[in-house]
Image (cartoon, rainbow, N blue to C red; front, side, top):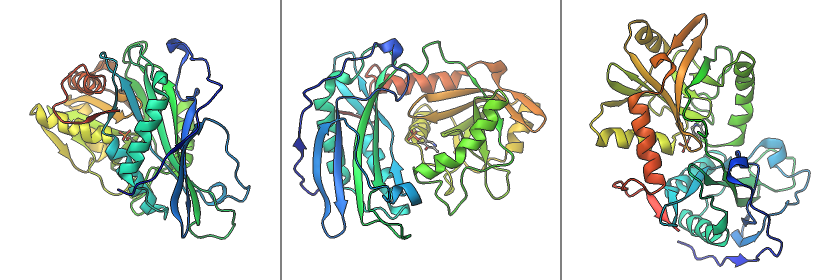
Amino acid sequence: MTTYQITTELSTNRKQKTPAEQLGFGKIFTDHMFVMDYEDGKGWHNATITPYAPITLSPAAMVFHYGQAVFEGLKAYMTEDGEVQLFRPDRNFQRLNSSNARLCIPPIDEDFALEALKELLRVDREWVPTAPGTSLYIRPFIIATESYLGVNPAKSYKFMIIMSPVGSYYKEGINPVKILVEQQYVRAVVGGTGEAKTAGNYASSLKGSEIAAQQGYSQTLWLDGKENKYVEEVGSMNIFFKISGKVITPALNGSILPGITRDSMIEVLKSKNIPIEERAIAFEEVVEAAKNGTLEEAFGTGTAAVISPVGELKWLDDVISVNNGQIGEVTQMLYDTLTGIQYGKVADTFGWTVKI
Ligand SMILES: *Cc1c(COP(=O)(O)O)cnc(C)c1O
């Protein structure tokens, strides 16, 4: 690990904390942020923790024009013993570097990034909310800052970490969602940027979400970009089905984002001896299973919600109801196990949690 010095400038103007019930998602930010710069020839330098504030960029900064932007999302949880812990943060910085590689952004030092995050968390420790189900959402990201309109990888970047206290995702209990299977648009294609956590993937997914919302569905189920046949993801989550007692999820094929929650669910299922298969899943197989009564559960996985059970799928003129719109047994078990580990209520036999 390269040793970088972090310069810390503390805020003299601390913000008021918002009550837990008014937190919502991603609207409120803590008092401090982490910033580090990159310049060709100089490498990453200027690691600083400074008061949370707007940044100044040239209108020609390349991120605005050609979209060299990658990000991560993870959470810090307050345990009942008053300790702040992270869930598999090493995986997030590893994935940030995979995204960097795809977008021609120079790699960061993963160990140092985790140390910087821990230091930022110590500075803003009192921002980790304590009410049940709340957490501190962490958003590391990197943008191209060079002022230049030529099309090539930028010569300068900013790596930043901002943090936002977020409310309980399931304040009113876990309610299964209704999903529209998208026919016209695709999220990603093999060879494209689907595997990278990059801003452009989100920009291109908005249209599908808008169409789903107009029809009264809360998210889009994405099929593959080539044959419009195989299941890829649901909204910005990975997807799982339980058919005839077996859990299946699409194999990572190059256009699917390798979710850390996805990987954790697979490990938990294996540890409980529940059959789990990673393979290509034609959506017709799901329709078939629904028709012959063997489709038992469906759910999306991601850091924000952990698990989002699917209660209904609309595909062309077919409306498929899953488990009568109720959360399934395995879905509930996975939710309880993962959140239990994250909040320190269930023994972490996997070694996934990291205390600050
Ligand atoms: C971030 C993300 C996920 C979920 O990843 P986690 O590491 O589980 O939070 C799934 N799909 C897409 C498209 C994503 O951007």
